[in-house]
Length: 377
View (cartoon, rainbow, N blue to C red):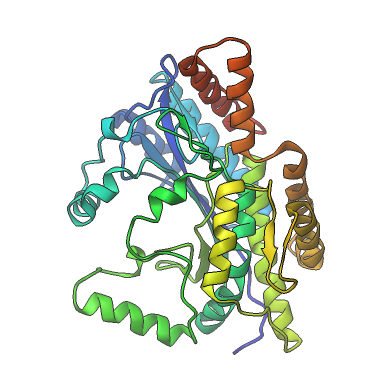
């Protein structure tokens, strides 16, 4: 495998929900909204499966600083155009109280095919995520780094959690989104693969018999992108605040470079069975940053505060080289502020304490999410 340093470019995709500014319930995107966004954002915006969703994607960015400016422009444009229709975007993975049964899918061939293929499972897909692409030109190197990087997916998930409520109920989870997404086929942690050839053969086995048309229908938490020469992390909830998005992007980029750097010294991260990594995935999904993850080397549950400091120290050299040290160090802020899920719960219970009704308290949560969307824009 070539050890030539990859570019480590990054790209970020985010999915947003559109809410009515008066009722704070979900609302479909008018055709004019999508047309206006498309005209201004030139291919960086698209509809999603449900017509109350909208997806944006940055250009290929050399560093997190470029990603920040692009995401500011994308978020600001979507919010401004949505405002013309008395709508507001929120970047949370589940709406606190809207019912999936009342939503309709976007009438496009791709989404009609998904509806027909996935039946009742896809109807519940009232969820939003974020994807981070890291540029790795060498295909075998992409797969090798992916095998190692998946160990850190629960750590990234824990920081990102933004989906504690579902259909008006506190689920007790920090990330309810994955319980919905995991009902789809070809999801979850990626299998261990020996190289790009094995990945291609597995995809070909499915496309040749017509089960899927291409690799874009493989929805693992981490995958080689079907469109770009990148490793694509897909496990995270979408983040209400822009700086949290950038922190997750920076960590993903720096962790990838750290693993590449190990290879230059003939070292690598130990490979753990998916069974063990999945236990941490569940702990992140359930508790966010509040109850710690398992350090499988030490065979003990370690507080997330300790793990977060270890992770920052582990990638410090790489973050400095990639000009994203401040964003990586910002991951420690979650130890004080809690995840978005923690913050949403605090808003809800503060409202209940102030004698607002259950429904009014959930509306307060949506108002909080609208405010968070605009922070740092």
